[in-house]
Image (cartoon, rainbow, N blue to C red; front, side):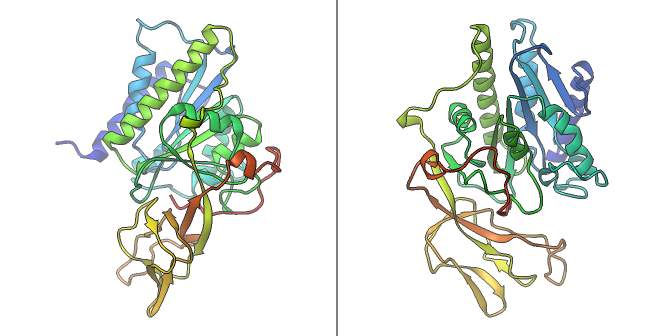
Length: 346
């Protein structure tokens, strides 16, 4: 029986072969549809090398789009694999987190150069959909990006998840650098990030990715066929997503810190609940009620120390929003440059 690693490598090979038939201006990117289309969409997979769950569905979607029985595409589409070198190395990234490289000022690392390549494609788009996965299990899939009206409408239309962890658009996702979706929204275009569940291949990730791609591409093609620019309507009340924001972040206390085993994204916790230890004899206690987000379980050496340097948060706690983000962040403008930082733990 083939291992998951072998399956992923076969998928990479299939994607690479298809990219030779439908090349774009950058490596590991497939371009389809007319270059003069009025609407351009980018589909991103495997920005992190361990987040391969969207790959089978992307390949299936590409096969559907190239079926000769289907009418010619009216939209222009880019499908890219973010970090194939990290996939082959079976790691999250080689030198630097690719999803922190979109200030585009790093030409020294592999990921910095790859971000500059991807920017050549992302600079053309009207819509960017970025498929991710979390390091730890998730109770259910969820969207996570700074609130932006058009992006939110696309997310709701996708019907890929019911929960949306969002933030004021003036707040950056990470102090380590700019994410790809942030870069696209700073340019005034729509960008949606979805977390499909725990990293790796799974039936659920396949189904969510494929159904959402079919829905989005089908809508774009239908609108263009009718001579309309694709702009999904604001969702009706029954289709609104459930909104969450960060209530508190617990900073990484030090190398002796460790969460209790088994925590998942969106797991409910109560104020006063023990979450782990900051050092022997000192407990990490949840300060508020809410749901855990991005719990961190680093790989450790024989001495129990993290193999890689840690920073940011050991875990976040999110809570439901009492207002629609449209109201809560009404004073924000999409042209604001993110300056404050949050920690992305996935």
